[in-house]
Structure formats: structure tokens, C-alpha cells
Length: 234
Image 1 (cartoon, helix red, strand yellow):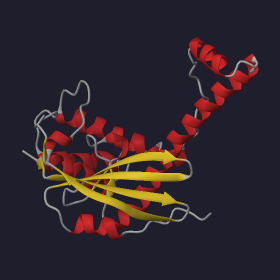
Image 2 (tube, one colour):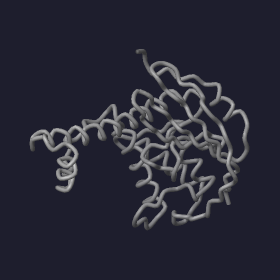
Image 3 (cartoon, rainbow, N blue to C red):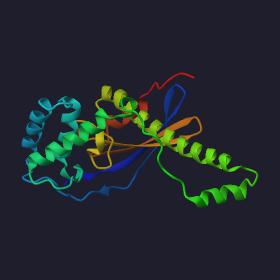
Image 4 (cartoon, helix red, strand yellow):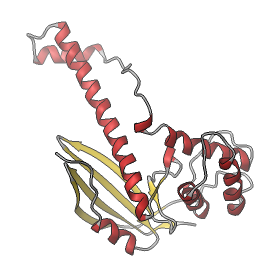
């Protein structure tokens, strides 16, 4: 069974141009239960069958990124996501690939956002009116719409940053688990090192909190501490 050794938290603050390491600390071990989700599990067959499917399926391809993410799951089966109604190994593999390429092909830079469709509760109007009694109904509606738009923009910003990291980190051997194809993990390496990225937006500062999970600590973490990411210019 795969057991996470320690969890290191690395905060990368991206403000304008350069990402700097802010903090690093380590926590006690976290164990993960083995929950096999694939019928007739065979790691070698899973990889070879996935390669055959991806090479001949429209909208899919086979490269180091796909192979690495799938292989990491095969080496630690509890990392595989739960997929409903999988009656065979091929069924699971096909759905896993659809999940991976669904995330990759619909990443933030490649899709058109949908119009905001959420409707706020009427009590929100009452609360805003109590605080700002001179506001008209139109004014309250503008506030509510701007709030929903801002929340949506923050979500898009997080997705764009994740995509940016995927592009830059691949150079260092970290591959993105598109479509949530690894449970609670965003990036992985061929050695089985795992990263989870949390995006927090504070004013003009974007902070990526990266949880590093791996069997043994070594060059993987050191390289993350030393790495600088260029995200743009002011």
C-alpha cells in the first residue's frame, strides 16, 4: 500500500513578474487506504491498453504526460478516481481517458465561459438595503451581478494559473493530472512525487499553495524551492 511520507507546504507568491518561495514547513504522515476501483486490475495491461485507445481515438493522444499520470495511479491504485458503473478494465480505462482529455481539451484558455446563471436569494436584497438604504433596486442588482462576476473571474484566474503552471512545470518533469484523474492531486512526476495546488487571490497577489506529497524528500522539493516562474509584467 502506498503511504504518503510527509506533506510539505510551499507557498509561491506571484505578484506581477516573479514567483518567490514564501514558506516551507512539514507535517506528520498521512496514510491513505487502498481502494481498488478497476475490475481485473493489471498495471501493465492498463498502460498498454490506454496507449492503444488514446492513439486511435479522436481528441486524444499519447505522450509522457498521459503515460506518467496513468502510471503513477497504477503504482498506487488508491490514487485512481472513482468512476461510476465500470464493468470491465477497458471500460474504466476509456472513462479515465475521457476524463483526462475532457479536462485538457476544455482547459481555461480553450473554452468560452458560459453566461452567469446563478440567482441570489431574495434575502440578499434585504441585507444590502439594510446596510445601504439609499440604493435603488437597480443599484442592488448591479452589486449582486458584480459580485457574481467577480467570483467567476477569480475561478477563471485560478484555472488559468493552473494551466500556466502545467505548461511551465512540465519542463521540470511535473505533469498535470488533467480532469482530476488523480485523487486530490494536480501534478505528478515519474518518480511518484505528487503536488496539490491551492489558489488564493488577495487583491493583486495570487498565491499558489502547493502541497508536496512523496515517498522520500529529495531533489523534487529542492528544485521547487529554487524555481522562479515568470507570469507577466506590470
